[in-house]
Length: 266
Image (cartoon, rainbow, N blue to C red; front, side, top):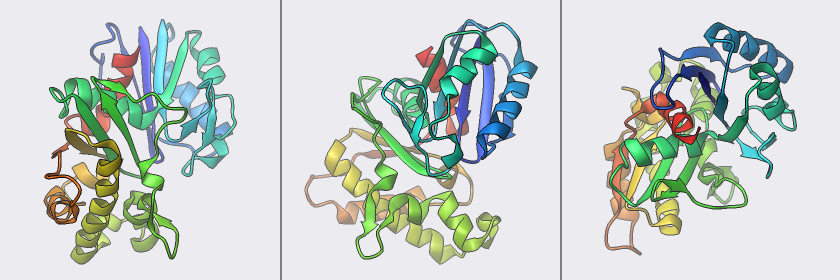
């Protein structure tokens, strides 16, 4: 039996597989504990609910991993996790080899190989959720890099220093419109978020030049959120360097993309 997990800034999903191809059952979802001590207790309890004998473990984390992929060096949504022995914790709890990855890289693998990007050689995957992240994949494999790319950290407003994540992420909307921002955000603000996201995607396209750009995350895939049509319209107007923009598509796997990518990475 194999364990896969996807730790986000708001929710943590865990699931098991017998064949490294499909999930045995629906994922177990818990709120992501912000404090490391609390996280260890709750995640260990969740793992115990799923099983007790594991052959391998793979999961994603929201932030920059160290070169040995044992801990987080930077995570704006989980600062108390930074520097903690995350890989060792999962290994101790499961007794199995553990592979830690960037959460967006795993979601990108899922979409490039079996999702909305399947059949395209160069895929850019962007998630807009609690935070904003992204990865570029060629032939189904993430780019080789010293550290995982963080397109959400690109500065959009040079005067204030605000980043793409600071303007269009779920955490940014929650800070501005409250925890129920999905229902309290005015229509004009969603339209403006589409324009700002198009700016960030334009910069990313100029750097990565993908065949297709797959967009995931709750701010994109939920019924109320940033409109892909609005993003595409603004992006088409912005693009001058290239003769056209890449195909834009919504994530096929939505909030399961990270788990599917972990399965494919075991």
